[in-house]
Image (cartoon, rainbow, N blue to C red):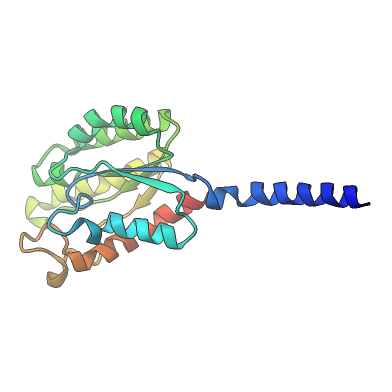
Length: 210
């Protein structure tokens, strides 16, 4: 009886380890391909939304997730595409967050070029067995209604085509608030970083816990 009990206890212990392994083990890698909005431009690194994401993961039993922030200020979709393959091979991410396109839009790049670059990034990520989170952007209306409309449509169109998770607009609730934008009216302040995270979280959180 004692031997049978010990055997049963061992089986239960192993089963519990299997059940709880995803919570306490290595849950995966999140690769962030972004521009200055994710590269902590104008704010302290520890105040940036990516650092706040790290804190949130640690507080929600998701500390096993590794974050690789490959964001560069001034980055375009063309630059991100050229860097992506090496980053995929080096880090083998489970999730790739694509937060690019804003600089392309501000420079007036053709929407079809932006769309093609992001499409290739999505395809390369999926070929590497990574899921994709696409972050939508918009540009100021002074670029003209035709261009701003075509630019904003890129992100939901691609999200629908490739069935990826989508953050509709990264700067939602931020861009039109003076106290949340730096003097250049392009980059969010330190006070806005929590809102950036809150804008990302509804789309990202299900991917982290699947």
